Length: 154
Image (cartoon, rainbow, N blue to C red; front, side, top):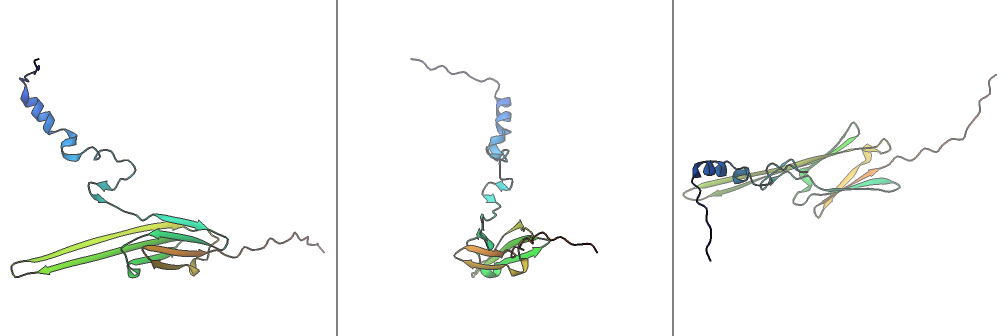
């Protein structure tokens, strides 16, 4: 049995096209933006997942934000928008006889929710425990619908 092999006499164009092939440098996912426009290699912007639960007296918002502390969060209400943001800064220093090493790490996120007119924005409270930020957004008491009243003209 013989194996047929074709000798490519024109190797230069093949080398050039192989070198500039899009998958060589960027990988298959570089041009495929898909749903996550902020992903490139191992770097990815992360926004915490949120659950919004409505019951009779309030809205409950739960954000999964592990690795943070209470002091890292900033919660604001402006123009009916509830904005939850967090920023964490870390610095590592190592000093030895022959060298010094300093590493900085910054991470953060910001997420906004449009609040309905039926909430009491000044009564929002928040707790952070076990990597979950929980907010309670109380609703206003519903105003009772008044019965129709006829007004006599004198």
